[in-house]
Amino acid sequence: MTGGDFIYLDYAASTPVDPQVAECMQEHSQSDYANPSSNHLAARRVHASIEQATAQLASLLNVDPATLVWTSGATESDNLAIAGAARYRAAHGRHLVTMPTEHKAVTDVFQVLAKQGFEVTWLEPDARGYLRPEVLAAALREDTQLVSVMFVNNETGVIQDIEALGRICRERDILFHVDAAQAVGKLPIDLSVLPVDLLSLTAHKFYGPKGIGALYIADRPRCHVEPLLFGGGQQRAIRPGTLPADLIVGIGLAAEIAATRLDSDWQHLQSLRQLFWDGIQDLEGVLINGDLERGFPGILNVSVADVEGESLLLGLEPLCVATGSACNSQTAEPSYVLRALGRSDLEAQGAIRFSFGRPTTREEVAYAAAHYRDTIHRLRELAPGAAA
Amino acid sequence: MDPYSSLVRAYFARPEHGGKLAAGTTALVAAQGVRIELAATCDGGRLQALRFRAWGCPHVIAAAEAFCREFEGAPVAALEGFSAGAIMDKLAVPVEKTGRILVLEDAVRALGQKCRASAPD
Image (cartoon, rainbow over all chains, first blue to last red; front, top):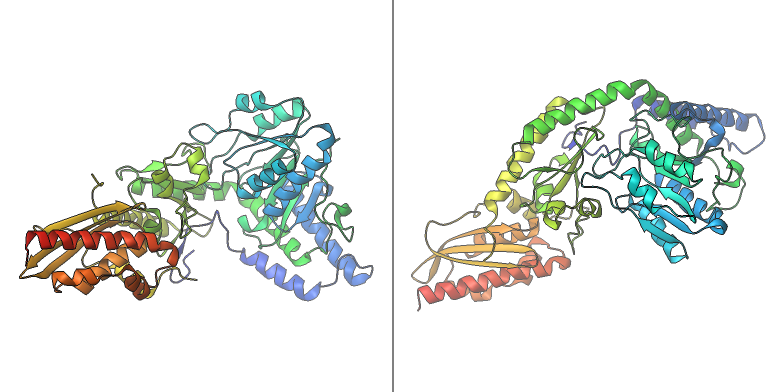
């Protein structure tokens, strides 16, 4: 999508709201504005539209609608799943397992729990970013209560083998949480067969509105979370608060649309990623951070070691992309995810994540590849040789 | 908020003094994760031509370009008056990047010393 003066290639960060979704939300906000918790005719209409949206999302995931809890987005879902499940099962054990390549919405919760008396094991990925099932199995203990692994990595696009990892947890009655923010609406997820207990998602990654997400909580014994919020009793008191009906209607329709487009979106993204890679792969020193063969095709993360990341990002304008660097002004801190994959500081600092979406055109991608090449050449020519 | 002033954007996009000189005096300083090389040809105590090469953030590249624009044609002795603070004000460089711009100041001083040594008054 070209926004007049920019070319947007940051769909892993957020997607535009589908026009049908936007229209539906607008209409709903004008016609069905009652508080769904009230007990009158207008409220019952809103309640019905929420039920319909819940069924739409449940259909995308092939689950019972009663297993879904609405939240404000993936960050809240991750917090509720991890902190809520760890506290719920704390009497049985306080050992938790995750990876350093998870999103901050996950790693930061584990850091907090570690300060509250939980013991956290951080499992390292292999060189391409995968968690090997045998590595997970070896880390589990009698007192392990929760494992959290993301479905699609937000920086590299690596897709974990959720089925194999989940089976290991299920065999040991350990809760398995999956941050699926980058996966839902993009690849087929059938939770009736996948051994997943808790799954986080957010609407704005699949052409729905910002501010609405959900947590799936499997209907299984000892699978529950303690709430983080209190008051009101909505959603069985797991996540109380007035439900944002317009946003819920939006995510419901976005889920329904996604379900009809999984294959065509995947093929579109695959062809765009290949076009981009064909355009840059002969660039000297370019590295892929992730897995071109098995990774999510909407994300291509590439590094060059000899170009400064912040200058690369500015030089790439008008492309809207993500840097692998946290890149605040004081310390150009390299991505912790790429460092965990074994990239050097310089390689991680010069990493750029290109992410493609439904509206992305081949012309935009061809331009982006050529502009990336030109910018690398320009910055290399401007750089002095290494100091003696 | 745009982290770059219009001058930083302009100098970064079109660094007219970026590159090398065929002959002349050069000074290279590397510190703070930044490398800056300054090159000058001097004639009659004046900086006839100035060029730079830099590996660093956009503020560093823009500051090096700003230095070259300001001092090309100036007396070599004027280099002693170069101040990182003045160029940071001119380009609106955030204070957190002071250390990086001080690398440019070090490079300017090194260039001045080399110019004076190669063509003493």
